[in-house]
Length: 461
Image (cartoon, one colour):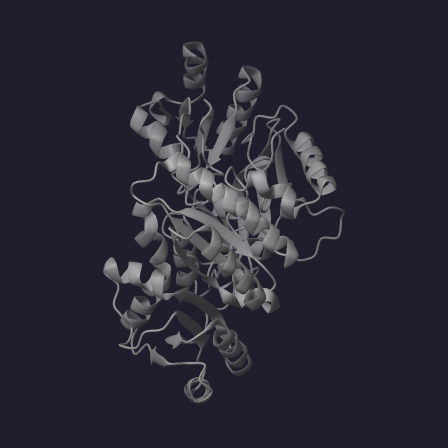
């Protein structure tokens, strides 16, 4: 491999080809922490031309490339464990253009999500796709996984804000898809093909993202709920009465972990479920409607207690109760499921899911939370300290196969917003038909004929 590395160092300056063990471990994995990273090297390109050169070099050397953004994914999609070269986009982080008429911002793939949000805010506009990893995730990775997050109920997914994308394919060709057009009825919209492709079709190098008006005086409430039926009743009521931007829920177990890591209890009352509601308050009438909705929910027995943020600081503290869950669980190396069903089927699915976990996970702690407003649930199974990781993963994989059967009955998906990667690959055929998977394979062969782009993710060649 010394000759391969020597030729790689001819493409990029030595300081942008990393081979130290600490760098290989850092860049070779994502948040799953379940797969041992073992890349050959880490490449840090700074231009589209350098990305093209890397792809052509990889074809000549028959070396696989794993694109890397902020590595905040939870499915192993950015893991390099078989001698691949990681292509990190962290040095491609420029804001290239802002168009106030089109309300778009064009950025390089390595721009951090929060940076785009801040840049939009400085222009008096708003980039609405949001999640707890906003401070480290990158726009290229957001597109590659079609990231959703906490405000999908109002604003949709990343693909809904993607006005154009520039990609380097597996042959080194640059594709510029859609070019920011609002209307473009000239055949297949390849832009959307790359949204959710997990780096298997091309390396995203630039993107033009749409912006919108900022929310008007967002307000946050957290409430305690006695049972799942009440939670869905409360959701229906708040959605009808308020301009919702988020409707999140978490269990008492999830709250306990966040409180143990420095979170502040919102009120003295305890309950099995909690909901966080964010909504716009453009006028006094909306604030009055929110209080009336809470009072009605309390009268109906749907809500036990609640608190409304009285300042931006308190609003951030309330949001931390939801957004801090992933970090509070990290030390337990959880096995994660990221599933979705239609919103109307959430109660029935949860009943079947809880029955399955009670039967199959009698000795494991299972923490779940998610986006009730769009039917997306996050499930974290915590590893017992005395249990070996491989035994833990094997056991969780067995139960995930059963969870897929439950999802099939309810018409759901095994991956709502973190992709398939390595973790969900064994279960793809329980959600997608053989014909669909074969068509996806054929699409990959068109864009990546040499099979060098993130091989082994989504499906095996």
